[in-house]
Image (tube, rainbow, N blue to C red; front, side, top):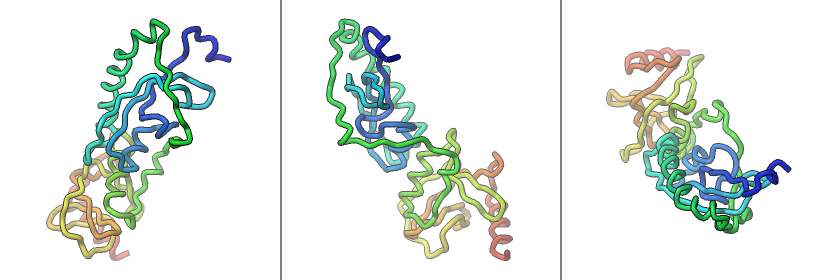
Length: 213
């Protein structure tokens, strides 16, 4: 009933290429799933979320090291471009109405900070995608050693030989790494606990104490 009050139509700008990634936090979900492209969709609003006819879309690339924050910046520009491109037609009452086939898409709900917990048994690419999807200013991908929680602030996934080490945080060649289930490791540039950066000697000490526990 509320939507019907909009005489010229009610519209929404959604942060994905509908019908893919309908629902909440679509940028984070797209990065988490390793997508190489996403975009924005201007669509008519309907009772069901993100289900109305598509008016216009603009795609943007997701580069291998892009975080969700990086992608969100691209989508902000794409949203402006999309609106300006179609606004004259909308004002003239001639907005396109393209099909939004929900059977060809996907729907995702919201995410909570606890969803960022790292499963180190996963392949390195999956762990890296999680980091990119929730990297600061989002809550971050996190892990625990003893009673301490560590959040990955900045990291990358180098193309290096596999490591024959237990999974989880480690110090290798004077670098902090996160060893994953397939033997590959994230190179962690910034590791945080209680909002402060963890130095390499601090982590070495924590790991040594943990190994004796």
